[in-house]
Image (cartoon, rainbow, N blue to C red; front, side, top):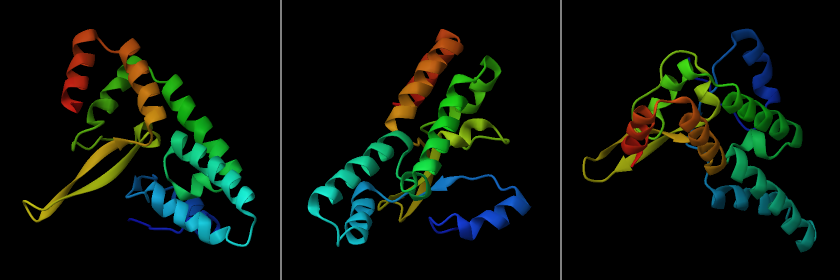
Amino acid sequence: MIAVTSPNENRYELWACQNLPLQIVMNCPDESDVRGMRVWEQRSKPPQQQAEYWREVRGRMDKVGPILRHILDEQSYDDRIEKCHETVEETISPETQYYTGLGNSAMWGGNSVFHWLAKVARIREEVCKGGFSLNLPISDHFCNKTLCMLAKLMQQDDFHSLIETQA
């Protein structure tokens, strides 16, 4: 079952507790969408306060990507970034197989920890009048951390193959 929720986690929380869903982030808003929403929400506040708030939200986006429920609430952001860092730091060699789908259209299998660090983006192509899905890192920050971790854990040839498939 796929549940599409608003950024307000309270509407989703009870259902999630009962069903224990696996959360996959798809089609995140881009920076301009988030900025537009923040400007509208903060429109009655002084410009300096708006700018300060935007810097804070943008900093969060740089780390965890534009996932609304994790960038607009400080506690949710802290929890998400901690979980992402733990995921990278606690990865062991056998788990590197989960990262082979990173950056290509191959989906990862099982209930691996990989879903904390990736988002599924839908790419539209005019040529074939359709599109395809692509696994992308949730942010440049965690892409770099993940690649550094993989470089330490994978055999050199396997790591080079992973990098070549992303290019």
